Image 1: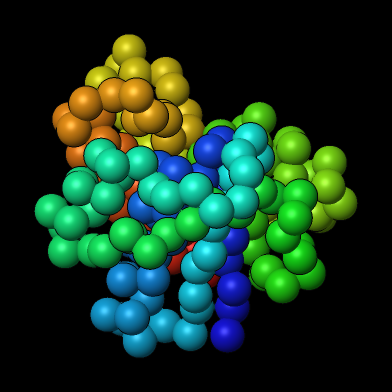
Image 2: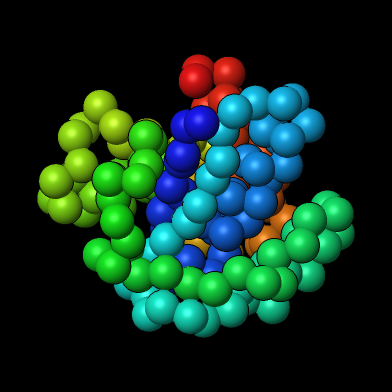
Length: 149
């Protein structure tokens, strides 16, 4: 089994949503991969953001039992791939000793020619529309990632 660690900032929005989406896709496709998540700027034990929980419920996915994990407290040797939401997080993961080739940055599909943001935007503090947009970006990026694995 391949273990994947999704990493974002607070581990309350993007990475737990990505974890749920990835695990759901892998289960439906009978793929031997499983995802977990952590954050680079959090403490252990917080719940997922309310809008993240509510948005995922609209997609039929339950993240109510999610609890945050602070990346430096995670045993990194348990993972085969580290997936970040942007390049800054990837640089931080690499600084913890993870080889560059084991790190993947999620990329969203641009919405138009002026859309220059590469990674997955953080919906924290935004409305439900921001969370839905984040989920759609995550779904697209995760499907692309799975095709590469």
